Image 1: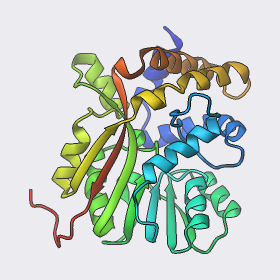
Image 2: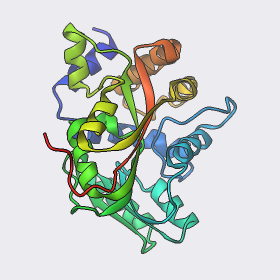
Image 3: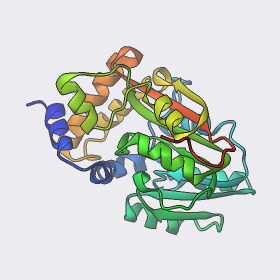
Image 4: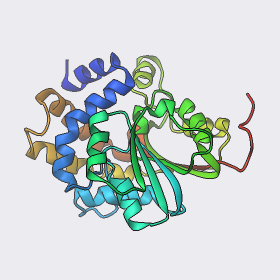
Length: 279
C-alpha cells in the first residue's frame, strides 16, 4: 500500500475534529519554520511566482479579507495562532476579533502571544458555533473549512451568528465534479464537498450575493514550494506523514487547476431579514 493510500485509509477512521487536531499538530513545526512568527497557517497565494512562502500566505489572507468593512466585531473560525486576527486589530482600531479553534494548546499560545484587549481567543468547534444570534459583523475562515463535518450545518450557524447585513468569507478545497462509488465515500469521509455545494448551502441558509471564486491556479502554483520545503526539512514532520504529504502535494501540483480538486474563495452576505428561510 502506498504512503498516500495508507494515510487516507487511516484518515477515514478518524473523527473530523480529531483529524484536524492531529494534522495540525504534525505540521506545527513546519509552519513555525516558514511563518517567521506570522501565526499564519494557509497554503498561500502565489500571484507572484517569486514570493516567499510567508509572503504568499499574507497575500492569501489579504485576498480573502479584501472589501470587508474594517470595523465592528469579526469572527475568525479556525484561527490557529491568531496571526490574521492580530494583524487586523493592529491595522484597524475600530475592529474587534474573536478567534475560534478546536485545539486548546494553540488557543493558549494565541492568548499568550496576543494581548490586545480587542482580541479574544476561544476553544470551540466550527460545527457548533458557541455564540448567540447576531454576534458578529464579519465571519471569515481561511483553510479550515476542509475540516468541517457538515458545510450545510456551518452555513446555517453562520447565518445565525452574523448580524443582518453581515459578511462571510472563507476558503475551501473542493471537488470539481460529483464523484461516485468508492471515490464518493472517500470524498465524504475526507469532507471534500463538490464545487457547487457552497452555493446551495449558503442559499438554503438564507445568504445572498453568493460568490464562489476559483483560486486554484495561483494557490496550486505554490505547492511545488511546499514540496521543496519538505524535501529540505526532513525532520520537520514524522516520517509517514512527510512521505504522504510529499506524495499528495506533488500529485496536486502536477495536476494543477486541471485536476479533480479546486481551491475556492467563497463570499456571501446575510440579508437584513428577521428569520432564515423556512424549510
